Image (cartoon, rainbow, N blue to C red; front, top):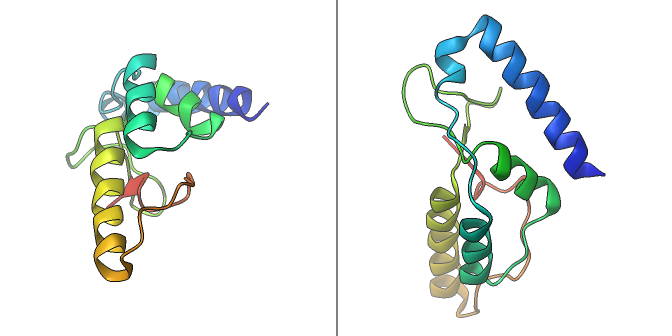
Length: 116
């Protein structure tokens, strides 16, 4: 159900951006492939929530730049490789400070998905 909502939301966002902000729309990357998403999940040892997968299957992040797509918080939509990089950095920091392995959960509201 949430995957359908994500796809419907992206349809509305894409239509609005295409009409009102075409240069920003152009910064949204093409879809991530299923293999890329699966490899990232395996590398992180997690299963991405269905809504994150649906979003990545629509747009694999956004390009950087002054007209780049950003959320109202100023955060940029990360691509799969950006999620891996940010999550890997968090995991290293967690292991260094606590000695424990990285978390096995994943949340789409974490700073691992969004970055400034």
